[in-house]
Image (tube, rainbow over all chains, first blue to last red; front, side, top):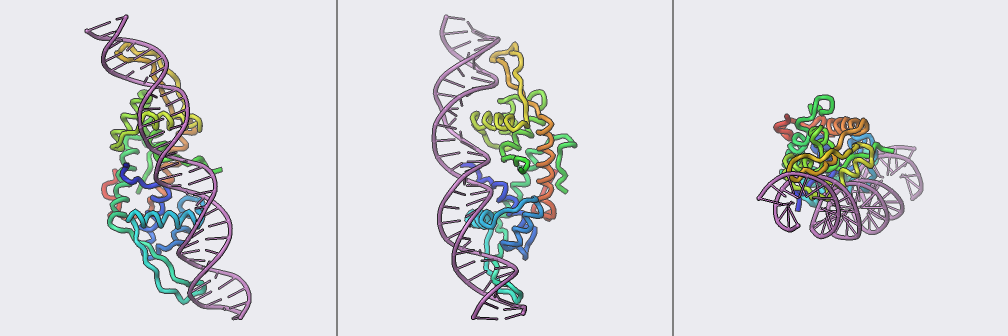
Length: 111
Length: 111
DNA sequence: GGCATTACTACCAATTTGTAGAACAAATCA
DNA sequence: TGATTTGTTCTACAAATTGGTAGTAATGCC
């Protein structure tokens, strides 16, 4: 069996969680995804993915206290686990590896 | 219509073709993939992918003359099309976008 | 209380992706 | 000629990932 390789949406989602830190809950992640990728992922697609990432041990979640704002119900906050961080480093290495040796015009600047 | 997003193997394959240039034919691509990714893709997986990429118009192929070496039968050589190059640039932008804002600690040695 | 808003769950459908591996083809070598 | 090497084609499938819909829950506002 392969080394549990991440799907495209899984990687994007994991990165969104890493980026959003304390603000990493479902709908915020969904907004981040939309902004980054230019497309809307359905609510179902997102939560399915988050759940799968948690099942794989790359994320954990906890429910927050409700907030005193309109619609401020409890949010499910996600955090990277150690394995999640490792998976990202692994993904990074993989990206660097497959892009290596590709000429400037086609090469990404991951700065 | 979204610009037919590339699968993981499709992207890796496309990059291998870009890198190998004149030496981009089936089995050489397969060796490159193995070296880059650390895993062996089956012959079927590779040619299926190459065929898909050609169907999508991202690659073209032509058969070479046989070579005067042992087992030197005609090879099917692949080249990037304009659309293929564009797809790579698109993939590059996408990668840059999803990785943007991710702190150094998660992206250790990025070439 | 009733409504709009924000958020998550459950369940299911469908597409995409990757796989195996045998068969076929053509070349040199002995 | 027959063995060996390199290379491609085919087919049919298995599994993983992604996408969608509808429903439920909690909150403040009026």
